[in-house]
Image (tube, rainbow, N blue to C red; front, side, top):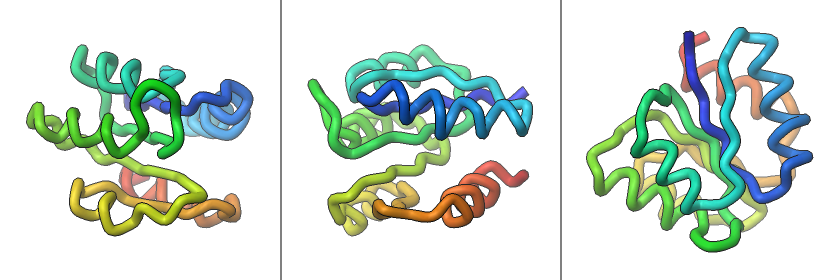
Length: 116
């Protein structure tokens, strides 16, 4: 079974947009509320895919991904943000989507990255 970690400091977004979507695909979803939690959970292992917001407390999405990549973890990561950080995201081998985005754009990206 596929495991996904979603990092977003807004629990409504994490629950509504991500958890419900992935349950349709039979994917197990865990939620982190900030970048530090994302790093810790990914380092603990077992994730096939990560989705992160850029703007989060304690550690932003790029900082978290940088730590994850520095530890040699190369799972697919999707970053979503209203801030255009696409160049830096690409340097970290992260797929980037800029808000606002339509549901089809998000779904297509997830399906491509997960191979479903």
